[in-house]
Image (cartoon, rainbow, N blue to C red; front, side, top):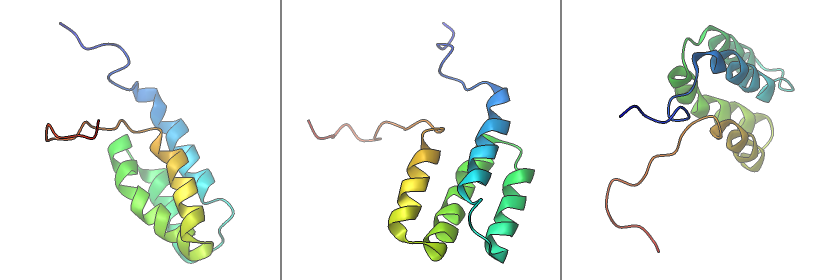
Length: 92
């Protein structure tokens, strides 16, 4: 049976997610932020953006704080599905 329609994100989501990543860095004027915005702009998939999250966190944390970086990353994380734990043990 085919997967539900919400299981696979539509391809047209990439530009919007890319824009959100760029906006997350819009108030940071550093060489690292500029280079990261370029990398975000050239990203070809949501997977590539997923891997840029750690760099977004680092740039924001350096410019502001870890708390601000966590807040901004939480907004970006909503674009990516969460996976169930691999083990059968999970808190009840």
